[in-house]
Length: 322
Image (tube, rainbow, N blue to C red; front, side, top):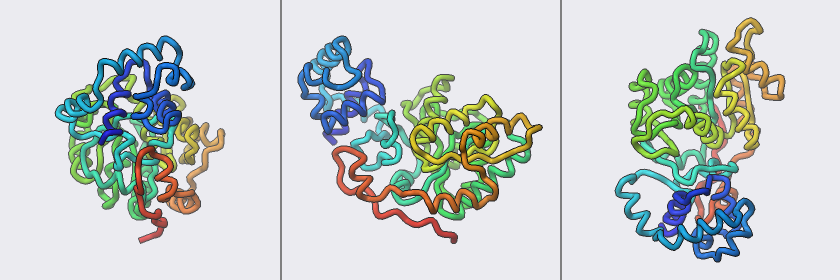
């Protein structure tokens, strides 16, 4: 509880983004220790100069982390920080994990991420019949093999990925570019309600946050961060799905793409990913076979990844057909 308060307090400080916040925590071991560090000690952290350092010292003098947490929890009861056991270990591994993540839905899915593999499935908002069909085929297999499907609840490929996963009795996580109480686009109202009851909705934006163009590229890093691998099923040359794929590659996650026709503009992005080294999806079992070869996050890694925590997860479960 105490460390949670310091994550919240530091997250409200002007000039501290996710990268610098994680760097601050790594330098001092905990953010509570960072809070009580001297101004000179803060300057030892890469990225904190005299201007920011003096601003942080002044900010600490007028803020009580525990009082801030008590007020914040009254307005926003459903959120995690990296100090909370429910915060996904995979997400904290990335360079810029969100210091606060809001949730709605089945909370046990956050713990399931420690036990089950997860795959991000993304693509164009306007898929062809081919793109729709392969999105459904892949997510159906993922659901049948107990793989959590992560996507962004947008139109098109995202919608088909979430929908097929739920229809197949699988588990899905939707990462939003709005508050978790907002439905966007409105065409996904039915799917939003299903995920709220059967899956998990996540966002780094508090309740009431409306859609904003700048939020969605940032949302994509969370999709990549929650996934052991990312699959792009159909995407044109300029697509947000390619941002997700690039972030996944930067985070050391495997990237897969479904090849398509050279005559299909919607396949240009996937073909370019393959040209750059993404693994080609040749059958609906390609992802399942690859997941069995990927290293899993076990108990020891989970303990080391998140500061101030004890054991978080049991040994990973093998990927096995039903």
